[in-house]
Length: 114
Length: 109
Image (cartoon, rainbow over the protein chains, first blue to last red):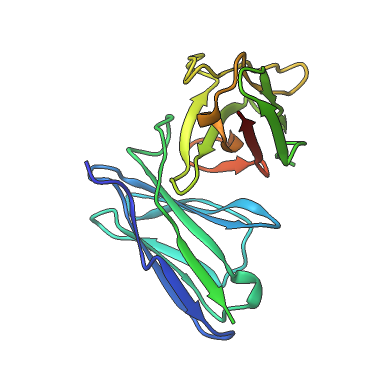
């Protein structure tokens, strides 16, 4: 069974630009969560999507947004990039939201903002 | 506010020694706690969760609601245990996890 895939793996942008990251969950998984990982703040929850609906949201500004498609693939978008947005962005998929299902993490997308 | 605290950034032990990675949480609801591990150049993966009360790779963790702790223990550390360990608290329904800052475990030969 293929694992969670994230594209691109590495990305370099400049301040003010916007970026879109993609996450393909494990086949059959309907829930996708996104996390930001930085040395200073650690792993922080961004949002979770289930059946194309945002189910949970973290404490990030509105510049961070996401969506989920009918095939469960998810994208997150960051507009007006700031230097502090440089981070590893991880997505995780699970069978369903609600009861506990193990989350499987992708390899991450390393975003560098110059 | 909900919070997970791992007080040690780095824990270094010798092979065969006992190891305990500390985790304390702050949460007013009924907690669901997990330990995740990330080996070098590998993805973050679930190690164990308090509900299952399993022992995975020799590691155990007991939820102590009185002390709001969920420490990870192993009686005899192995070199292959060297990794980053994250304690996480699940909030409500769904997949929202609050992670601690992580503890790097280094097991020396």
